[in-house]
Amino acid sequence: MSVPTPLTPHLSKEEYSAVYPPSEDTFFLLDTLELNPLSPDPVFVLELGSGSGVVSTFVKTLYPLACCVAVDINARAAEATLETARTNKKKVEVVVSDLARGLEGLHGKVDLLIFNPPYVVTESISQTKDDIDAAWAGGKNGRQIIDKFLPRAGQFLSPRGVFFLLGIKQNKPTEICQIAPELGLQGNIVAERKAGIERLWIIRFTKNAEGTKATAQFSKNK
Image 1: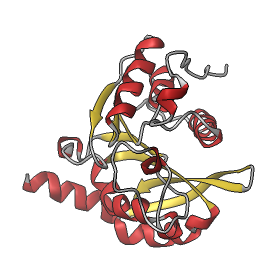
Image 2 (image 1 turned 90 degrees about the vertical axis):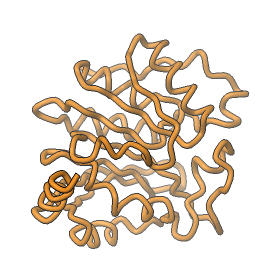
Image 3 (image 1 turned 180 degrees about the vertical axis):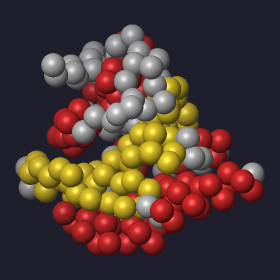
């Protein structure tokens, strides 16, 4: 049975001037998460760049017992995420943070990590946290934010953790998969979809042996 897309009647055009709205990439991500279920169910879920909150609310529907934490650098997006969860009668913890900084307590605990990053190729990334451009402007090759977080992703994953990352063809997904082992990760493209002029992809990462050792060492040294 298909899981319904969360309702967002509370989000107005004014809100969408500052908050990334549910779009083709959002629905692609929802479909991929539903078609790639985790077993056993995740205990901790972390979404970066929650925007409207549709993804985290959807995941809470998929995994009702999971603790879902949604993070966005944009305070208005964080408010929208919280309201989307409430509207759909789901509980999602919401944090205003830049790429989960300050959430080091979740290192080694996240069973499901999700990131729909700013991936559009632009001359630079946005320097304004509450600007809508920060939701899509990815800088050179659309990779500046992706490359900033990727080395830290494995630190958050539990031994059985899975990380879903979304992007477009210009982000060079094959290259991302090739460099993943150097970061303690193993990545494979698990879904692709054409959306207008863009070719979307989603990479599914897990920890490789080195990544598991690195997290174990980090936990030991805390």
